[in-house]
Image (cartoon, rainbow, N blue to C red; front, side, top):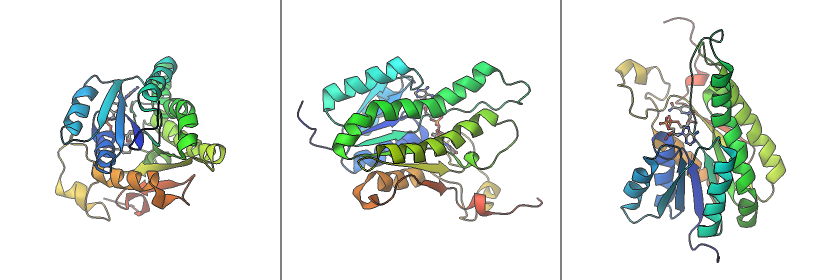
Length: 245
Ligand SMILES: NC(=O)c1ccc[n+]([C@@H]2O[C@H](COP(=O)([O-])OP(=O)(O)OC[C@H]3O[C@@H](n4cnc5c(N)ncnc54)[C@H](O)[C@@H]3O)[C@@H](O)[C@H]2O)c1
C-alpha cells in the first residue's frame, strides 16, 4: 500500500477520558487517528470525532492481549501502510490493601498499564522507524508518590517511566519516546469542589486537554530534540509541601 496522505496515529484507551482528548487534538491537527480500546463504545467515540470531517477510526482491542495487539497493528498496516505516532494511554487502577490484593489483580494492572505499552511499541516499531515517528506513554505522578493501597498501579506507572527511557535509547534516533505523568485530571466522573481546585498551585484540577496539548507537542516535529523524558502535568501538586490540613 502507498504511504498515507496524512500522518497516522494510534491512541490506546481512546474511547474516553484522556485518550479521547488526545485523539481529538491529533485529529484536529490533521492526523488520521485510530483508537484501540477494549470497550466496544470506542466505535461510537470514533464516529463522533469523525463527524466534523476528521479521519478517526477504531478497533476493539484488549491492549494486554499479545495476539490481539499483533492483529490490530497488522490490520492498521494493511489499511494505512504507515504509523507516525503512538500514544499508549489505556490504563486501569485496582485500589486494594496490599494484604488483600490477589496475584491476578496485580497481573491485570501490570499487563494493562505496562506490558501493553511494550507490546504496542514492539508491534509499531518497524512502521514508526520507517516514518521517523514518536511514542508518548501516559504514566502518572503516582510513579513518584503514593496513596495507600495502590501498589500495582504505582509499580506499573514507575515501570512505564523506565520503559520510556529504555525505548528512547533502543529505538532512537529514528523514533523518539517520551512519557507524560498527569496528576489529577478531571474526566467528568466526580463532582469537583472549590477546595479540589484551590489545593493545586495552578488553581484548578486538570483537564484531559491539558495532557492532549503536551502529547501533540511531543509527537510533532517541534520536539525533535526531546526524547526519553518524563513530563509532569499536575498543576504543581507534586511540588507542594503539605504538613497539615
Ligand atoms: N484521570 C487521571 O486523573 C489520571 C491521572 C494520572 C494518570 N492517568 C492515566 O491516564 C490514562 C487515561 O486515564 P483516564 O482517566 O482517561 O481513564 P479512563 O478510564 O477514562 O479511560 C481509559 C480507557 O482505557 C480503556 N482500557 C482499559 N483497559 C484496556 C485494555 N486492556 N485494552 C484496551 N483499552 C483499555 C478503557 O476502556 C477506557 O476507554 C491511564 O493510563 C491513567 O492511568 C489518569
